[in-house]
Image (cartoon, rainbow, N blue to C red; front, top):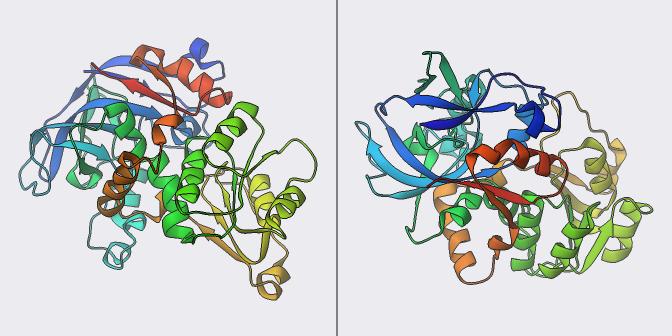
Length: 374
C-alpha cells in the first residue's frame, strides 16, 4: 500500500521542499487477535501530527503518521467481537482496554495500557504490523497510522458509524470534533446561559465553539490572530470575536463577558495563551487546557487565586470522551444541523500533497484538511 512515512523529526519548513513525509510502499501484516484491517477512506491533518513532524512531541522513529481517520473494515482477526467486515468506522487515537483503573471508572481516554502503547508506537496488544519495502518495522502513530491506504488497528481503536456518513466528514469526528466538543460537553459541562471563551480557532477550537453554541452558551467569545478564522467563528455562533494581537486580551474577554468567562477553553497548545485564558476566567470559573504544549513548557498562576477566588484549572484530553457513547451523539447532532462540522473542512487533497498540506496548517491557512483515498 501507499503510505506517508516520517523517518526523522525536525525537518525545516517549508515542508513542500524538505518533504519530511515520504510517500512509500509499505506492507501491513494481517491483523492479529483482537485486531482489524481497515481500508482508509479519509484522514485529517492535525496539529498533533505536525508536532511530531517538527519534533516538539517526540515519538519513536520511523513512524507512519495520521490519527484522525475513517474507513471500512475489510478483515477481522481472531476474537474480534465488536466489529464485522463491512462496518464503517471512525478511529479513536487512544485504544481503550476496558479493564484498567481509568477505564473501569468511566475515563477511558486515560487508559493506562493504551497510553503505554501509544508511547511505544505499537498497537494496544504490543504488536507492530507495519514494515517498509526493506523489512524495517514502522511504528504506529497513536494506534492508528491513518496516512495510508490501509490501517491495522486494535478493535478498541475503531468505533462503528453509519455507512452513509461521507468519509471526509466522518474523519473529523475522530479528533477535532471529539476533542473540541467534548471539552465543552464533558470536561466543562457548560449549561445554557453560561459564558465561554475559546482561545485558538483551529479544528479543535472551532469544534469547541460549535459545542458551546449547541450548549446555548452566552456570551460566546472567540479569540485568535487570524481574521478569516474569527469571521468563521462569528458565522458559527460567536457573540464576540477578539484579535489577540490587539490590546489586553484577557481584559477584553472580561469586558465581553461582564467580569470574566465562566469557562475559558485554551486549544492553542501554548503556555502564554493558557495564561491569558486563566486571566480571562471569572472568580469561581474554570480554565480548561485542551492544546498540547511542548513537554518542557511550564504554566504558572498566582497561587492565592486558586483559593481566594475558587478558580479551577482542568486538563481535557480527547474531550474527556467515551468514544462509543460520544461519537454517535455528535454525529446525530451534526445530522440535526446542531453541529455543522462540515464548515471546518477547508481543503481536500491527495496523499502526494500531504507535505504542502502541513505547510498550510503550520501557517494558519487551513482549519481542517482531509486526505482522500480512492
